Amino acid sequence: MAGNWKMHFNIKESTHLANDLAKAVLGMDDREVVIAPVFTSLAAVTQAVSSSGIKVAAQNSFYKEKGAYTGEITNAMLKDTGCTYVILGHSERRTIFMEDDGLINLKIKAAINSGLDPIFCIGETKEEYDAGLTFNVIERQITLGLSGINSNKLSGLVLAYEPVWAIGTGLTATPEQAQDIHKLIRGLFKKKYNNEVAKNLRIIYGGSVKPSNIDQLMIQLDIDGVLVGGASLDVESFSRIAGFIKT
Ligand code: PEP
Image (cartoon, rainbow, N blue to C red):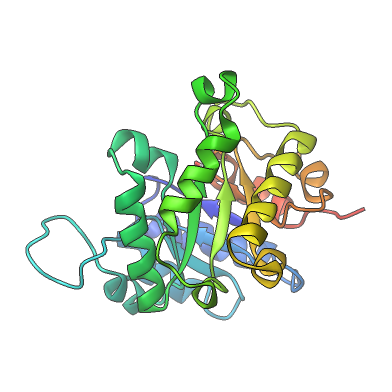
């Protein structure tokens, strides 16, 4: 159950929310809760949640180990703050910062090699959805994004299916629509790798997840969790999401 705080909150605000969240998710030991603050808050947030079981993710990283790459940050520097995950391939990185499948592949490889678990985001745009290209797009993103990565390196990977048309728009794929795509994704991993990899892969859904739709999403067989933007910025709504009720 991952919250992507995007470009919100300074150190004081992030720490405050992290502390509140740590209290709110106390006892939720059968699920993993992850929060992704901005770079400048990573160390403080990691410290704030250290005894709570909440894990921390960075929102991006670069694939080089050091050098003249103004404005970039390495996986080792991120690990140094105490975080364990890194979100890569988010649609905002793809569309606003022009990240393509090749660059995302380099970033995923570098993150895995440094010991960070990638939360690898994929998903089709509204135009691609309308044109019936959803599966072609996600197959391409998975194939190119994970190119050259051996199946024994995939145990920590989390795959986030986020239809771009559902991100921050209030539109959500229905639980059944999301389930259908997640099932296709798991099938693709079975075909590309093996049954074991497919079975163990955590496939999470993102796109306008809210307290009002979380329970229906989480009863779907192939939905293992969610990646939440807007609704993760508020302790009440995110703790309700993290505390989903499985019926
Ligand atoms: C996201 O940006 O990953 C996301 C899912 O955002 P939202 O929940 O606001 O749609």
